[in-house]
Image (cartoon, rainbow, N blue to C red; front, side, top):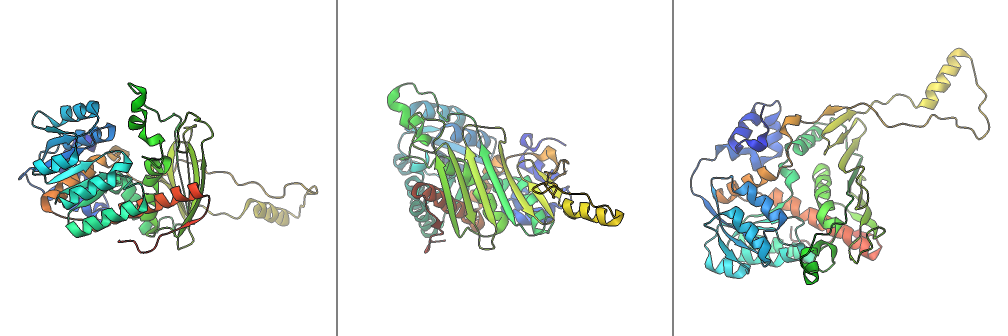
Length: 418
């Protein structure tokens, strides 16, 4: 079986349809269900707004979709603009202002992959211009901005898709299906983390470009680890629990990279959900040993979604009880020293578990996300659940950021538009 990253979407879904349980899995991913039915036809005209590293990656996937034409690229940093044009092809026009681009081009859709603080006003301008929008996560820099984006979508009726690729990752959605089938019992705890060991800085050609290129490190443009990393895993927790958090309390600091940055290099948070389940989350930029993972726990089993594995929960009597039973049966009672340990400590499981999904189908979902967006635009097919997931993840992420800044519990906001 070939790696689907090297296949067309039709070949991928043909393979996908042969796998046991795929019908049930597609019921979890209705945004992919009809992709295989697409036939060649009208090409959509698409504009790229923000052609930095992430924008370029999305372009690489888009250029392989025959129904998509990247007709223009917009970026106000010349090296990025040139890089985007090189990928888009000779037919693409260059712009440094998105309003000029919207005024001159007849576009079906745009990809917005700018720094976070630019998301809201650009997306709203595009929706108001009657253009479908894919916007990279996190949705916006504030909850108010995120809500204004929802209002603009509702008013325009256009597609707004927020870039949470785990919604298109077969492994993650298969895990969700297994959870719905009660394979690990009710979810009682979620633990997630994302650890790196780098300073997050990029080289700059001159000092005055530091804040433009290293925007992730400054509060005017970024919410740091929360919006850049945590937003992914908060979306996963929301989807698995089928709820949004009641509240969050968190803490963060800069305890290692004391280089003038304004955002934290480590954060720790606890989100409380209505059913009593908690998401315990941490992220650091000074140690990568544990990498990233989402651990989903229930009384019948444990899942690790990034690693794609599942372990059944074997529940024998507690070790201390086993020792006591043995002593009663043999009428042998050892003297336990005062202050000594009477219980054998619990140890972590050491077996390798079983795979949630076939390893050959490993993919982070970004390619399928681009395929799906083009398909949705061609059909004018809006999928409310995708926007709901992106919006709620943004709200919860920004709640966590606010909690860290204010050093207090932050509750889910009232009177949201969605």
